[in-house]
Amino acid sequence: MDRREFLSAAALAPFAGAAPDWAALDRALKGRLVRPGDASYATAKRVFNVAFDTATPRAVAYCATAADVAACVGFARRNGLVVHPRSGGHSYAGWSTGSGLVVDVSQLKTVRLAGGLATVGSGAKLIDVYTTLGKSGVSIPAGSCPTVGVAGLTLGGGIGVVARRYGLTIDVLKAVSLVTAGGKLITATADSHPELFWALRGGGGGNFGIATSFTYQTHPVRDVTVFTMRWPWSQAFAVVKKWQRWAPGAPDALWSNLHLSQDPGRSVSVTGLYLGSRSRCEALLAGFPPSTRTVKSLSYLQAMYFMAGCSTLEACHTGPRDRFSASSHFAYSEMSDATIRALIAQVGRPGRHTVLIDALGGAVGRVAPGATAFPHRKALFSLQYYAHFDGASAWVRSARDSMTPRLGRHAYVNYPDIALKDYKDQYYGANAARLAAVKKTYDPTGFFRHPQGV
Image (cartoon, rainbow, N blue to C red; front, side, top):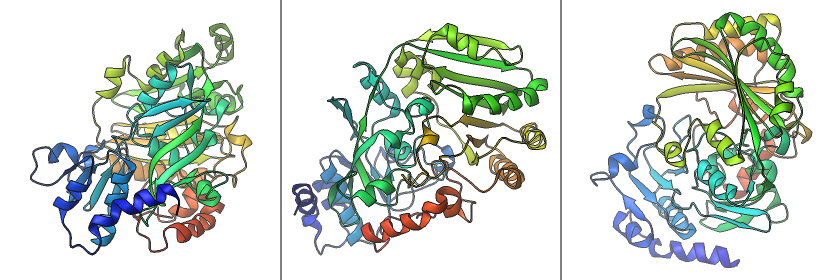
């Protein structure tokens, strides 16, 4: 038996044949167990989306080690409990919580750098990864939400602000350590458990095990240029038409996203990052209609704060929680004029909502759709429908349904939408059958499950 597997098996031994005994689990953990009635329970059970505050898990286990995670899996398996893995707690569908045992890995947050490789605990928040690596002059391609956990971000693919230059987060992933349904701690790489490693690169969280760490190839960083352009709503059509032709085919060093917003008033903006000089960036922006424009040079770390919408590490950590509903599309071709007008009309409806459109192409599109579990390599951009309550779910559903005949049936697993009935096809496309085979191999009894599992 592998040494790591022996460690995990040993962690399960105290519960062999035992009835549910929360006190025993608590004693076995190096971390701590929080149960209903404990003073910290109300805080421990919270996730990012306020809409899921009504969830009442049987317990929340703050795991301090991989062996703690294995102990929780063994305890849940013996006692017929559903486990809810939680890294940053940002699951759009609320799958970071529920009525079972929340296995919280937020204490597994160490970031270590050696030989150009970063080994990151699965509970690390993205802004902490950027900050720690940035001090050593390196980074990884990832997103902009500062408090998202690296586990959920990575396992679904990882669309981010330098993706067009360096690829998705999974494209620099070298290894994943995780606890399997059998309670074993294994490490998946291209050479060890290669099918599982393939599945973990885009197959989504909560399907194959509970990740405890990730190893990524880093890239060197230097000063970059960030920019924001804003227009009145009357310019929405012209801006969208220009942006969709420009952004996916721009130089790889340039990434941008477009926001059409009704929150609270109507607005149009493009924000982005260029891995180069301010003067060159200004030249690349020249073809847009006249706008209110900000272009500035920043250190790479400052740029990550800028993209996260916060100016300091403390501010990034203390941002407010939200109450929202969301869904997504991928666009594989440019939108027609009629489609652009239909999208603008949806955003123009009363409420508090936004469509966020992220450019793809570049390095993302140069990977074959079947090389990893993330299938949307040929998409030009992703669209996210994001709305705040009240009335959020109704707007999201209506907006997405109205755009589906125009954009097709493609969605991002990291923006899960419980209303999608054919979710496997939309999230995984032609990769769905292979993912199901990996699931059967590593979790034949379906121990890890949620309403949209593979």
